[in-house]
Image 1 (cartoon, helix red, strand yellow):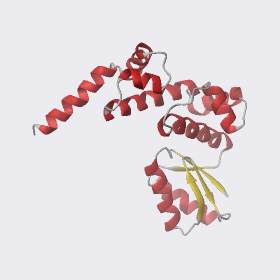
Image 2 (image 1 turned 90 degrees about the vertical axis):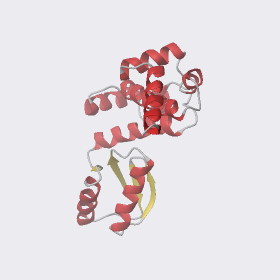
Image 3 (image 1 turned 45 degrees about the vertical axis):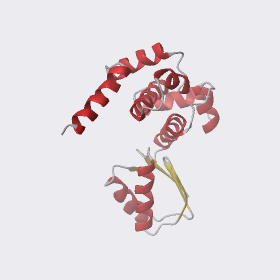
Image 4 (image 1 turned 60 degrees about the vertical axis):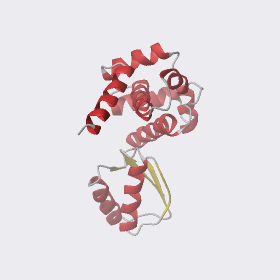
Length: 186
């Protein structure tokens, strides 16, 4: 049996879900971002207990088909941007469509209806979050980050970064360095 979980976007969330399943003595095959595959069907009582347990951690069990599809779309995007070494070079719409086995127009319409934003806007937000992470790690320069995330260049990355955060990437990085030096001087 497959369960779909909203807001499950990190390795930490996977650990929370695993703990909840163990606590309720539910055996599982796999836990992935947004999904859990159980070995057997669960009872309505177990469903309710799991739902309550997950809500305490800010996660939500889904049973609406459109919400489930949106969580699948989000999981593909998050996996693609945050957990792959390099973002795939193929067109995002084609990549998402192939991964999920649905026409992209249908996916885009469902996503917009449920989330109130486009898939492209969601991708941009996550790319900017990834840029922030990479800036904070301080292992790559802006040119390398732009290349890794398939921006046309540093100018495009910087423009998009400023549009989303209100800061330039270099100012964001300076803020991080300033905070670090303030902490060291305490």
